[in-house]
Length: 63
Image (cartoon, rainbow, N blue to C red; front, side, top):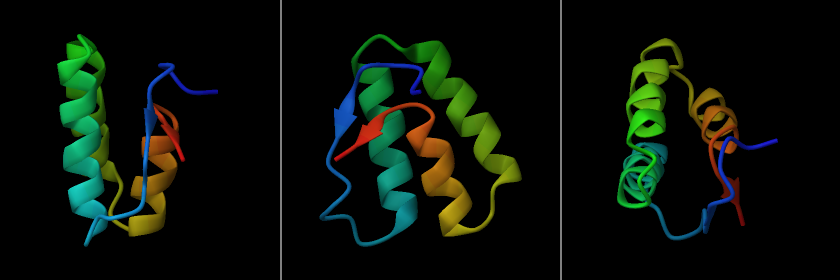
C-alpha cells in the first residue's frame, strides 16, 4: 500500500531518474514535503532502476 493516494503516469519518461524527479516534485507540490525528502534520502540506497521503481511504488500509485 502506498503512503499517499497520489497517482502518477509512469509512461513518457526517458529514464528512471526522470521518473524519480517527477515523483519527488509531485509529492512536494501536493504538500507531502516530508515524504519528498524521505524518498530522496532513501534513493541513496537504491541503485538499480528496478529498485527505484519499487521504492516509488511505496509512495505513489503508478498507472
